[in-house]
Image 1: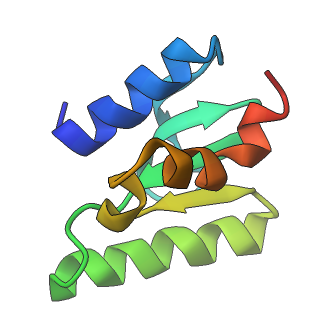
Image 2: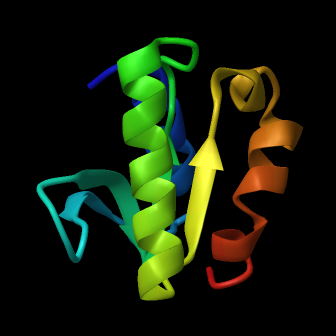
Amino acid sequence: MPLGEKTIDDFLYKHNIPHKKEVLYPEGQFRADFSVDGVLIEYFGLTGDQKYDLKTKEKQKLCRKNGISLISIYPEDLVSVKKLESKLKKVLNKA
């Protein structure tokens, strides 16, 4: 598991937030990094790579199309615990 995903996984575990890993999207062959009560959490750690950015947009579009909540986390969101907490507030409120 890449470091960014591990950071998110550790954070969810530390806050006693039950979560699933590598959850399938409703369409296509994509997998989300995590799922918490139907909210998908993706760590988009390779931003700036053209192919990766296209895949990111496809995942976000799929979520909009299917009415799925998606929390998109980027490397800059992992620079502090406060920033990560802010991004994950939707699932923190369910804990």
